[in-house]
Length: 170
Image (cartoon, rainbow, N blue to C red):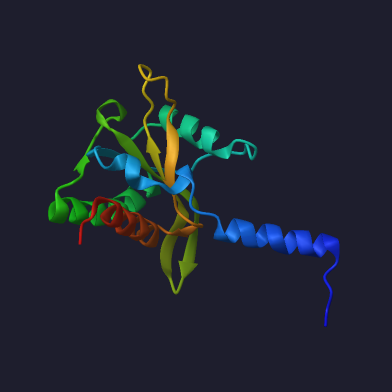
């Protein structure tokens, strides 16, 4: 019989606790049920603040131009096609063109472009950011994020799947 050292035992217990912990507010799309208008943004964030990374991402998104440029336009188009299919099928979402008319922002942070068999694949992180309300003194916040760095179409597919589940769409 093997006996775990106290340090190793603490590590195992903390790992099990975090693995079994329920999803907190970071991955909760329940807040989006009454919100219809979404703004899609795609660019490479220059965030280097590791202590308050989500706050830095939000600041970057609030300052960015919503119109994609260069090769990010191609990534934007890929993601927008999947979102448009969802919009046309379920009609529970509409596209915004400006930050002021959006209820929330869907932001794809391009991390890298991978070349596999002479085809380029954009990889990055997907965030859903709810705009804040100065009247209610609530700041903008991330309510959902992709579980890891993913291929763009896989990331938006995960978001759409979670949106359907939270809104009861089949």
